[in-house]
Structures are given as C-alpha cells and as structure tokens.
Length: 257
Ligand SMILES: Nc1ncnc2c1ncn2[C@@H]1O[C@H](COP(=O)(O)OP(=O)(O)OP(=O)(O)O)[C@@H](O)[C@H]1O
Ligand SMILES: [Mg+2]
Image 1 (cartoon, rainbow, N blue to C red):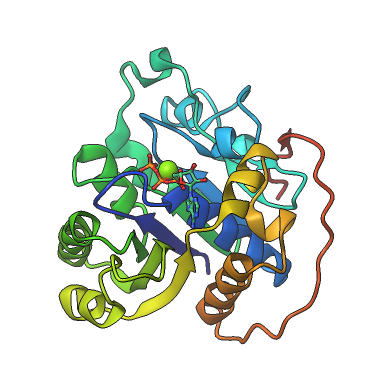
Image 2: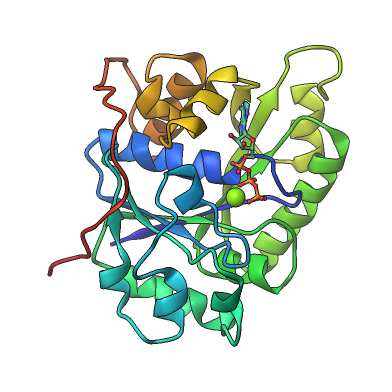
C-alpha cells in the first residue's frame, strides 16, 4: 500500500518544497521507495530547487493525458525520485487541475510513499493538492500571519477527511520575535513534529541544487528532517554519515513494472 502525504501551508514561501524534498531524501536514505510530486502546477519549484529546469515529461503532460505518470519520474543524483512540473506559462493553459488527485493516485502500488508538494493557500490548485493526499503535514513559520493561514489549511484538510500528521515550524530564529511553540501548538491544536532553524546552509544547498540532507547531512536542519522522516515510518533516527557528492542533474528513469 502506498502512503500519500501532502506538504501544505496557508502562506506561501514558508518552506513546503524544502520540506518535501528533504523528507523525501531522508525517507529514501531509510531505504523507502519515495516519489516527490510537484503539485504546485502554477509555480512548480522542484525542478528549480534540484537543478532540472528542462523537463521532458512533466506532471502537466500527464494531466493533459499526453503521457503516463510512470514516464514522468526523474532520478536526482542525490538519490531522490521526483515528478517535476513544467515551468512554462503555456503549460498551464487548459490544464484540468481537478484531475490531479486521480492521476497522482495512479502511483498506488508503484512506490511506498508519495510526497505531494502543494501550492500555498486555499484556492483550487492548493485544494487539489490536498485532495491528492490522504495524510498532510502543515508547514508554517513562527509568525502570526503564517500561523493564522496554517489554521485555515488545517481546517480545509479536515473537511477533506485528511489525517493531519502535525506541523513543521520552519525558519525559526529562536529569539523573542518567534511566536512561542506552546502558543503555536495551542493555536493549531496539533503536534509540532519539528522546529527547523533559519539556516544559512539552506541557501548553499539551493545553490548546489540539492536537498540540504544531501549537501550537509550532519547539520541541525538535516538531522531534524531525518527525525521527522523516521517518525513517519515509526522508527528512530540514530545518526550516521552519508555521501555528499554534489554534481549532476535530473535524469529520467520512469517506473518499470
Ligand atoms: N530553514 C530555512 N532557512 C533558510 N532558508 C530557508 C529555510 N527553509 C526554506 N528556506 C528558503 O526559503 C525559500 C522558500 O522556500 P520554499 O521554496 O521551500 O518555500 P515554499 O513554501 O515551497 O514556497 P511556495 O509557497 O512559493 O511554493 C527558498 O529559497 C528556501 O531555500
Ligand atoms: Mg514550493
């Protein structure tokens, strides 16, 4: 059975794509077969984060039924499998976004975990990304605008009968300007899975087109991503170093049955 986990937020730019690729990479390091899907079809960022802006078969092509979802899987040199989107504005034209949940669910039985990187907010596109999942992780930054929006996303997820796994608080400065964690927990009424710090190495990883869990496997953020991944699969992260080769781009692999 395949798990479908959406990474969602109310406010944009809080770190969903960063969380999606790093949880995906961490789960892959735990030996899980994982595919991260870029469901932010209006502003697909996974290819940008991972250095593969030229995509032959994107999720957009699959939604338009030109292609099979199995042919849209790319292997990143970090070991992460992704289904990227098409960054061109033209690819959005006549895109029937409401088909996305059904198409993503064609991955059922073909992999162990599907991580769905959602668009922010509560409009059509974000709702389709929520509908594509069965479980959801909410990402927020520790400020009131993002937390207020996160609460709306949690309510929307519940209306769709999704299981809310918890909240990742990202870009925490750990100073008096952050909303205290106990207040975030009380406002959102869900577990805080992890608090990821504001981390200068994130920019370095982005520049290298890799998840930080690959470029800086032993830094605080990476270890926290691995702890969340471990929790998702009911195990505990006990440490250990990983390779840190940094060259290469996305390579199309598809899925062979
Ligand atoms: N903990 C962090 N420390 C520093 N920079 C971070 C951190 N998390 C994310 N970033 C940076 O913040 C920017 C936005 O992150 P990201 O693209 O993951 O957000 P998003 O929620 O997916 O955005 P969107 O809503 O547009 O899809 C990126 O440049 C990313 O590298
Ligand atoms: Mg994003």
